[in-house]
Length: 182
Image (cartoon, rainbow, N blue to C red):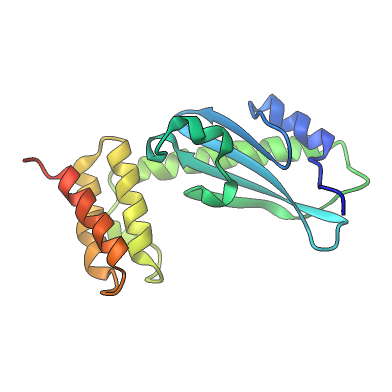
């Protein structure tokens, strides 16, 4: 089985949007984020999926990792449309990608900005893994310098953490320690 290649017209559109790289994943860094576009082969070999991801640079342990960050590691992820047909590849795919990618960037940036003032219970949708979302949002707030809001997410998420989730509880404790003035 040959390796899957990024469709040429899509690669050109991604490059025009500032992405770099080779293989099925390309990266861009701007506005405090690493932006990732990934092309994923479907099981039938005739179609593929276009996945977008964004992750705040402030949450990376090393900014040098931005060029190797995977879409599935991103804090924010989406899939552009449904399956895309591999061949024949239409010329109107580039504008479709460009528009979808621009909308994704605006939504991520607006969502992060919204974290500054939203009540934690309104930011975390549902209760399934609410502690992970709360911890992520607290980290994003900390990276943005919104320490009081980060503490609100910590205070809301910690009591919802399952007792056996000791690593998550420890992450909350370490974050609280960093955020609480001495």
